[in-house]
Image 1 (tube, rainbow, N blue to C red):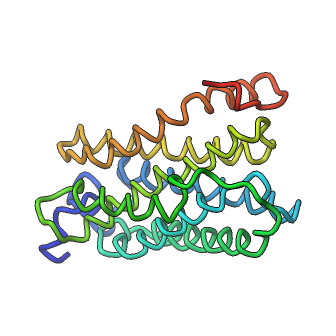
Image 2 (cartoon, rainbow, N blue to C red):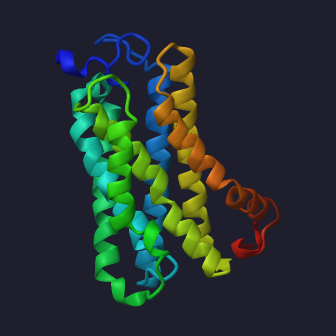
Length: 244
């Protein structure tokens, strides 16, 4: 790897990835990848829901646009890290990018089926610039201009990406079943990645800025997850607007 990229969180040597030829992934890499695979599974569930109902009513187009931007960003910086020494990472990145593009296309194609959108300051044209500014000032390393800015941007954009969907569901009172499972799985995926950054912290690689993004995401969706787990346990409808 180039010297300028040595401080990226993912390419750092031993703890993250075993030397070429090793048969097993370290736990840190496993957590990172499994989080994105869960996200991919959630996206497939959402594609099925859209295909079944031919509508994006109740879904936030800004959330899908945010995840598309994050996926494109990952395509740039992930290939500069040792993470891609495992074929599972290539497969995950390809699948995640394809499904993000597919969801964005479906949202564009079926845009006429919804008239509800999140508040302006949570829309993608507001969150994307805000996340880039945050990434510029809060990223690993000491260089002002480095690939690590894109790493931070990805994490901040993904963290902000779910907020429009949560806001929209509060305004719609009852959450449709498949949509509720989609959002629940997205939060689970983010929690798994939070464990990844926490594991890195205990290994001595202190990427607190990136861990902070995942922690905030988890806290903001905590009340929804409480209701979702109750729905899984007892069944019935998920009424999100009653939670405070």
